Image 1 (cartoon, rainbow, N blue to C red):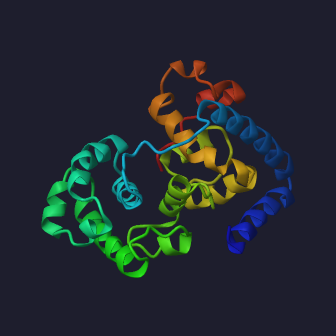
Image 2: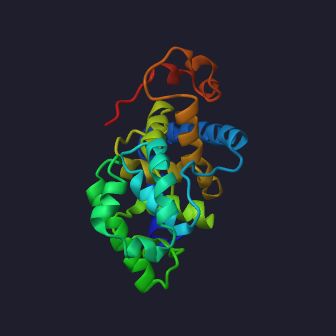
Image 3: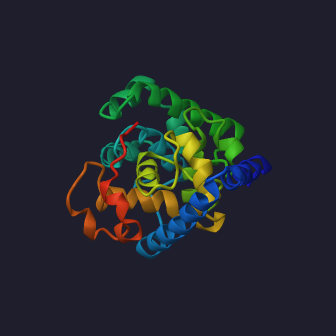
Length: 243
């Protein structure tokens, strides 16, 4: 992990401990986070993305397409798309109009078309047709920001340089009072300060799978029987807003 990320994590942790009245809160959150991650590890011991793909670049494409779109929709589109577009060159040489039409049921499909084709050209021309296995290279690709880079690094290379905070991770971080922050970017370093790096891999996919299949975003009454609820019962009455 880069020195800048390590330094940022340490600074966040130090700030928590230094603030008057926050030492106890930080320790309580650290203990609660440990219990939550332990449960997620048991439930999802081998966390994997539910996006379908056959090649590394297809996975990059799938993640890019999933932005503000459901995995189910992306998988439905890619089931057909990946029959035609298999190699990096297939994407790099794609006709923009035809590609846009093929993914038109995905949100922001025009911008995603531009980003995917441009990213394919960079991978082919600058990285020899191989998806880069480091954040710096991934973030050179159009449409790939920090969260996407973390997801790709984890899924394809089993390297976890951060915690990808999406809507599911944000929702549970707030619901279980692991942070006071509200935005995805500000929540990530706080979670990294609470959770040991060796367990980062279980957080994103664990919360995503838990939120998608067990505890959905809309308030519901049957949350009492959900596996994470006994860890912190006040979560029963906390329903964070989407923004």
